[in-house]
Amino acid sequence: MSGKSTPLYQQIFEDIKASIENGRYVPQQRIPSEPELSEEYGVSRITVRRAIEELCADGYLVKQQGRGTFVSTPHINRRLLQTTAAQSFSSVCRENGMEPGARLVNRQIVPARPDEAGFLQLDEGALLLYIQRVRTADGQPIFEENVFLPYEGYQVLLSDPLDNVSLFDAIERVGGRRPAKTRRRTIEAVRATSEQAGELAISLYDPLLYLNVYFSDEADVPVCIGRQYYVGSRYRFES
Image 1 (spheres, rainbow, N blue to C red):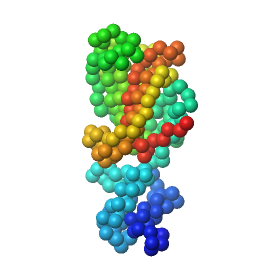
Image 2 (image 1 turned 135 degrees about the vertical axis):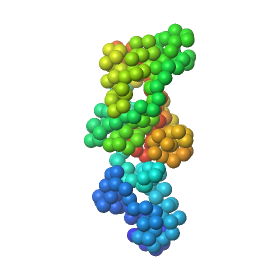
Image 3 (image 1 turned 45 degrees about the horizontal axis):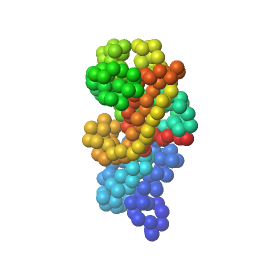
Image 4 (image 1 turned 90 degrees about the horizontal axis):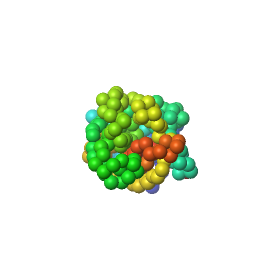
């Protein structure tokens, strides 16, 4: 570990970080428990816990309730700001050498709000199909996916299997039009709710990146709206 002038928790932080970077601990490997690390380093569990929390906050580790603490998979990089082209998460995953996954959380019919109806060119009182999933990379939760589509024309997706499939592919298969461009998008930092924390295997109030995107097809015809909540320590947008 580092010199004695460095706080003990920081020494443990740096030691475990180095073990991850040099391959002693590999992605998705469970690290020793707090009592085991406390004994290994000869420090209190409180000291170990602070080091672990810092490593989780910096994206090196992830806690999984009831299972322990695991080494995170590398950040997924996605180019975002320099182009209006839309890219599916499945293709982004594969570009980063990871296997994409999806778990359906909820889907229902909801009334279109004014901004949704306006963008999707729907009449007042129109209905939307709302699909909520958790997207994963190599089995690790990356973001909560919320997609809003016109119910008319896409109602079959209310019952189609949507686990471990590309929603862009499903939308194109059903409606004949694929999300290909982003009409407009915003991104902001938010805090995880209790529901999101449980779904994404993070702590309550952990930082998330909220991306609100309006998708159109190649002909610039509106297709759907996506409202996604990314775990900041596991996903990186590049310009």
